[in-house]
Image 1: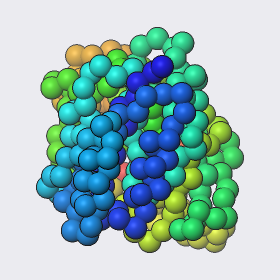
Image 2: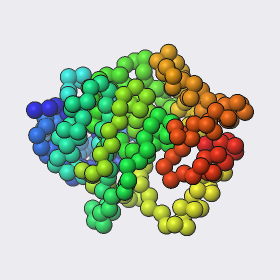
Image 3: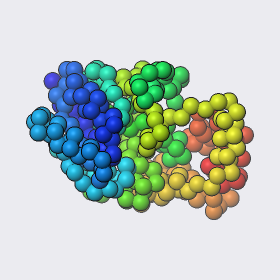
Image 4: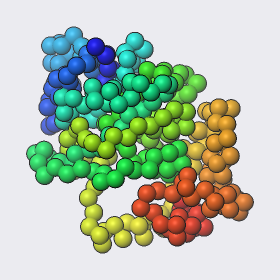
Length: 305
């Protein structure tokens, strides 16, 4: 039986945390070690966590200070033991199907090296009703699209031991500022895309609860709202991609190989005409699904990529 270390970060999550913990502990055909880092909750979440840690010998709780979601998750991952077969992230307000972990393992266990599994999500309301899939087609996932904006969710991730060990190595740990800007799931996806593999499962094994208190989420938009959002994004000045690319160059300059030039071009495109030209030729790498060629070109020219 495979052992899976599940990393869960909580923050004022008492409203929904119990069904999520129960669903993690009820996973079939795997041995779960649940490691929960509380990020400075001020409600009764710590009391709930203490109850589970006292009741179950495979639940471990760290009541800590507030660091923000990205730093909290990665610091919890750093504290995991290296003796599990696989590692997973979990959010505090979802509910997992009982076969979530073993299904992920079955998909990637024959793949060698650093592999990250991610899946679709069944979006539901606060009462776990009105279910529908988040993705109707497989999203485009590569290191270029993740630099711009990650669209797969950490709450679906299951990673191999080798990927966990690579992420946890002292020399590979990103700065706290990066994790405040791009959070843990974007960082893990980027590292996996650069140095390993990402397997995306079009099926869902998770009820992804949406409510007003979500730290991140999958919003539903009308056609008019989508058009307005595209226009807003066209003129929004964001440096999150540059923050990510700069951190990659800082940590992995000697390990990026042929990918280094593309990342440097992205990092410098706002400052260099030649970098802009290179980026215009790399639409296949950096263009998001649903983004037209015209949109991509305009964003490069306006420094809004």
